[in-house]
Image (cartoon, rainbow, N blue to C red; front, side, top):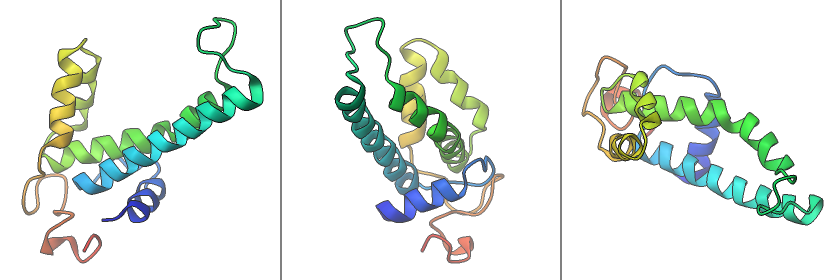
Length: 133
């Protein structure tokens, strides 16, 4: 799956927490969100004079972007965990300081289970009905 396909899929499944997401789908979408927030941060600095060192200044456009992209990013991460045959509740392990974030990152990097699992068909395999081929 390419960059534009991943972005289109993840935004199309805005709040779909069921199913599975391949590594490429998740990481391309993650790159998209990084680039969006990078651009919004620059726009905040230029348009509103946002200064990260000033406590009275806050990133207006970044906050709007965060509200808009929170659910698609969360649902993509949960579908990615489903691909590794883990419940979406494992996402909460990221709340554990330091170690939790590392464990979650490893789960998101791991290769998904081959073939169908309890969360659905393999997004890369032949049982995916050609959706992600």
